[in-house]
Amino acid sequence: MNLLITNIRQLINVRENPRLLRGKDLAELPLIEQAYLQISGDRISGYGSMDSIDKRIPVQNEETWDAGGAAVLPCWCDSHTHLVFAASREAEFVDKIRGAQYAEIAAKGGGILNSALRLQETDAETLYQQAWLRLQELIRLGTGSIEIKSGYGLTVESELKMLRVIKRLKENSPIPVKASFLGAHTYPLQYVNDHQGYIREICEEMLPVIQSEKLADYIDVFCENGFFSVPEAETVCRAGMAIGLRPKIHANQLHLSGGTQLGVALGALSVDHLETMDAAAIEALAGSDTIGTLLPSAAFFLRMPFQPARALIDSGCAIALASDFNPGSSPSGNMNLVVSLSCIQMKMLPEEAINAATLNGAFAMEMGEELGSITIGKKANLIFTRPIPSVAYLPYAFGTNLIDRVMIKGGFI
Ligand code: NIG
Ligand code: FE
Image (cartoon, rainbow, N blue to C red):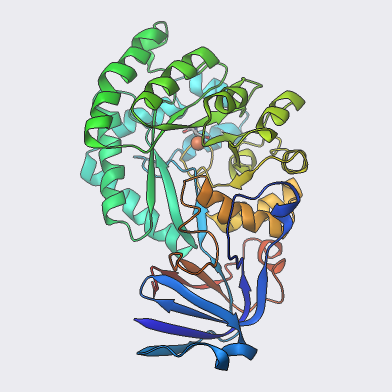
């Protein structure tokens, strides 16, 4: 079907040649005021200002729809989530309110191990149904592409179960899904004193099945003091790379773990979290093609210092924003909130935050040619807002749902 959408007050992030944005370019958010947009099938096929609508090439079998002064922007590209999990963890949330620390909870078998236990006892169908509902909710909140990690299985059987659930989501989801294998999320209890034993299990038992069933696009490791050291993370990443999985690493969340430099050295697609950065880590990232993915809702929920977004941008790093949706450190996958937090707490400009949550997020899933901007030929996954006075109003009115409707593959959901 061909659709002509008229009366768009702001058509946001319009680009002829989209590329990964860094430095000053991140603050450039090209838009057309009073615009029209053409959709053919599931793709964007044209756009322009309402003044020039009569000059466009006529299209056969076209329906017209009046957007009523909505702002239209590409859907959020959420490049870091743990969407598949078996149970929420609000008891830990209350423990933390009462004063318990993240590391303390983890040491008592809570945290990731708690999620792993629950996932191990939950069947694949239930996991799929739960994740499917979460995915539908995120789409209604404007997410139009998503990365999903394993990492709550931590046994051969359960990691593969989780990855097969993600594969099924990928096959059935209306939005593109990328899968990351995060078997190296933490050491299961029986391997706490035998790290090499678990790493062998990852490399020799999990990865071969992942390769033969094509269960993952990326390899991820939680590189952190008390979790996977730099040499351990490197071993796992290299084993993944040997079967074609590019690294996306959990780095520099709680400590200066060296994860950022490791990611850069391995040519990782992204290093994610980055709450704890020093000049050396920033410099390494700035001089690389690795994307720094900031997860402000995790910092917010864990009451940690936010990521140093200004220093990263001003040093020339390419940064993306993602939700980290998971039951332990970010029980929300709402990218509208992520964008607001980035402006409020990390002093990102609204233009920077929107670019980082759309185009750069798409590049952090290797979908920058397909999604993340208003570009002819790109997939029509779009957010239509209630009328807003300006782009800055989006992050400014935090907590207000400004999304009026969401279009996926050229159709309204
Ligand atoms: O990205 N940092 C490590 N992993 C997840 C959350 C872990 C959990 O508590 O379940 C994260 O924040
Ligand atoms: Fe994460």
